Length: 273
Image (cartoon, rainbow, N blue to C red; front, side, top):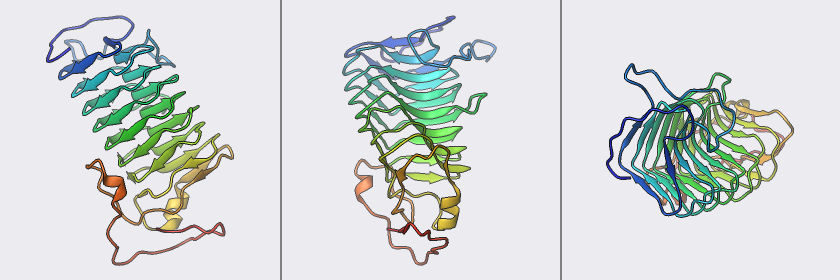
């Protein structure tokens, strides 16, 4: 589907559905009617083939490509269900009811890169920019997530997901480790978050070397909430933001700061690197 215009009315199910080797490229998908009222905001709890999704990559889809889209005013922006080796790239996803991009149920080997996800709010405060749920070995890089309830959520993951070189800006919570496995969230910028990290039931999670918007460990530690006794490695931390606009950004350290403050170093031996 390339450079296509269509007026679509529907009561349930995805607007666009993709299968193996499908290419969905280069159009605007606007989930509003002529009165600029959203037609796709039911209060659904799980994305599936019957949900109101802008783009839905069907179960078993392999090597699909979703690129250069503008998706707005739908409940789920782009959903991948049991999808493998596919790409969701260079798209803008805005004004979403629940999840901007959702990698779901054994989705593996997929790439999410260069996307902008913004204004994702839900009435239960569970609007997610990007969500992993039962997914493993996926990569998210060089994305911008801003103005959401949660920037990134890791929920019942299957391990091996890598999230790096992303900007998460002005969100309620930067990262939610709801039930994460041995995934990684490394070399990202999180700025303007009301809460930096929420750790629920998780273990072995790698969240080192991120820029948390401050050099003050008292501020950073105050932005971490452990609500269920989970564990994650957050230190060492970066002392300045990284360049997230290039593919190799996570290999380039920030320049040496002129000065920085080390306040509130814990007995656990927090480090700055």
